[in-house]
Image 1 (cartoon, rainbow, N blue to C red):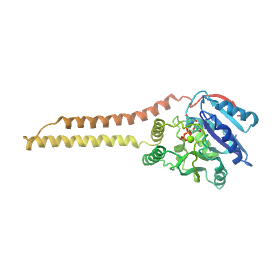
Image 2 (tube, rainbow, N blue to C red):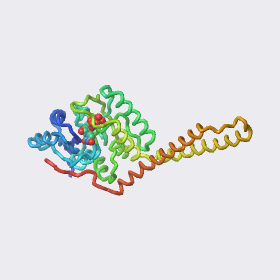
Image 3 (cartoon, rainbow, N blue to C red):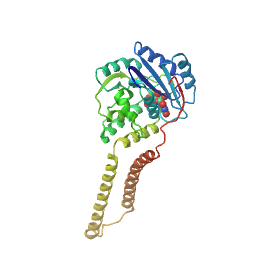
Image 4 (cartoon, rainbow, N blue to C red):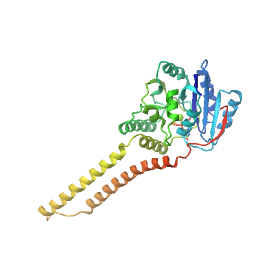
Length: 310
Ligand code: UDP
Ligand code: MG
């Protein structure tokens, strides 16, 4: 049963041993006078993260731990947190203190004024490297171009969701969880609180470029079928180019027989072009088949090894 007076904080943690103590301390300072629970979802950490969390859960029952058997991924950890949270609203944030907990009271204020979702929006990204900034900006632009559900840009997984929204997402059965999209999908009234993204407190990012590309592909294919249309268009374009090439070849043969030299270069370019279009198209279809495959398998999203104070 949910408790409207309570604010739930959900933090996915994966190998964040040095960040646990400072994180909980700053959360508790920011939440003074607000009834709250802090749910730390350990996504199969292999360092001392779990024992660091247990030091705190022993002394303080409002700090809770859910631990997975293995690494199931950031979005899955969030999903477990949403299932367990009891509060009238749930705030999710990263464990590395890049998302400053001090703005949570402002988010709660906006929620009390009626917003069902309050996004924490980064107004600067000066601490992130060029690559991160650039990939993030390309990702949001591309995502919103393709998707039927626009997601606000420069918004990560730091957000507050009202109980109504949490109940909605908890009832979704889909396997590909892309929370930024799912939260926006409902069209609930939303608001923003701005903050400056800080440097990672300790450790290093778990999102390499490869992981980010996967994340982007997952996000796009979970929310839009436009890439499939794009594949069809690509097919039409390449067929048209091919057809024009045929006409050109025939006319050349008839009117300029002496100049007409059939070059291997033209052949090579043609084959590469058609081959490329075909592979891209198959790849796009494959992405969607992969989604269908995962949905049909319908495996559990994560496996819980241990719960403390839950
Ligand atoms: N995280 C997770 N599972 C993973 C990767 C990351 O639970 O497989 C957590 C991580 O501990 C952190 C948050 O997700 O709390 C964001 O990760 P990170 O800071 O590495 O990403 P970045 O801020 O660089 O995008
Ligand atoms: Mg981070």
